[in-house]
Length: 122
Image 1 (cartoon, one colour):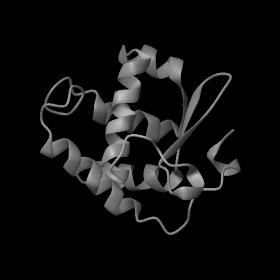
Image 2 (cartoon, one colour):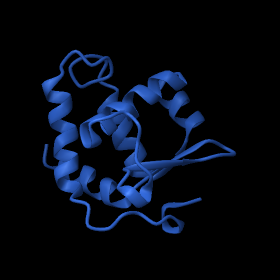
Image 3 (cartoon, helix red, strand yellow):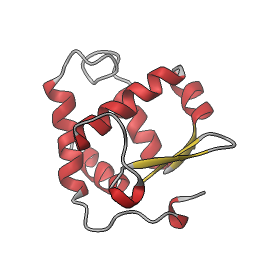
């Protein structure tokens, strides 16, 4: 399943949501994978946005992470956007979704575009 086959919610202000993610990390310097600690969160998010669709195994291998670590990073982004750690479905404005066989993360094109633009400014 690729993002083109999914129905993503329209009208989401992804620039604002990405700004919330960056602020979330900056306001919480003690986050394990944040930019001021292990510094894996931003490269991880850069990578999944560059790929738009990436397997869990590739993320684990590339970043030397276990599944719980991946969920920590994804949950931090989700917390920044939604105020809780359970990502909304694409139709409800979620920033990513998953598919199985192999387990794959699919990032919303709007989030991807806004993330890349925000990171290019820094």
